[in-house]
Length: 314
Figure 1 (cartoon, helix red, strand yellow):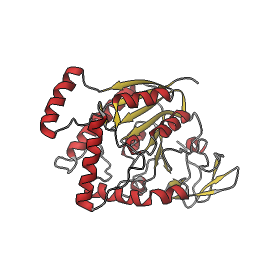
Figure 2: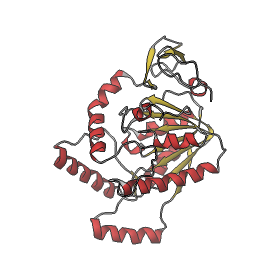
Figure 3: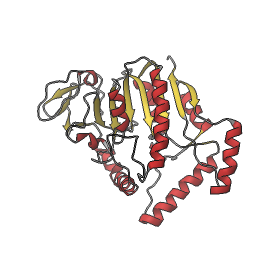
């Protein structure tokens, strides 16, 4: 894929340049030296280390403390970018988590292989862009969106020389206000991200807006429960863990931190999606697992099915 002429910073590819929009007024953006300029109000947005900085200053100020805490926790837990993700070596501190995520990502790739071969994919909440990299390697054009610029676990991980991929466009932006034009994406991926949103309904609405008719929203690796009480127990347990370890636990800011299987399906249906759930256990297996988990943990643990929402026509 051809790239625009470069100045001090890489410019967006022609494909995504046509789709980028001003986060302030939704005007079209044009590539200029060192960043992007709004054609409507001439506002300027810098491109730093290959990342288009399209997050408003007010929202940036709101999330600074919570984001710093999130990055600290992730670093303490051993999460960081690797060119092999979701594969990790045996004995990795998060081997079990990545083994599960690799299984879920293969499920997504199997589904994707049954779609048209060349796709425009928007990865919202992309983190260190590992999924975006894997998708770009398969020929897809990917816009990776996140508020985290951390060089180890955020968008900055692809700023390392030789690591960036020409088919991955990195954008610092809020998942509730995606700076892309309507109807530009074939697939929107929310991979381990939606449960962090202040207002998941807004994220889902934005996903529908940027999807082409017939496009699909795919939700992976957000914790889903049949009963909200089990989800609340998980959240309270996390808060106790943070308080014991750090003496601090961030406010939830409206984010539930989990979903119920019926609630998530209902939210997608109301937003204009035909919903299918892939990977939820049968009633018999679910009941057996519930008994084991209640005995071991005193509560049922989360499931991580894949939700596919097919955008219905207006």
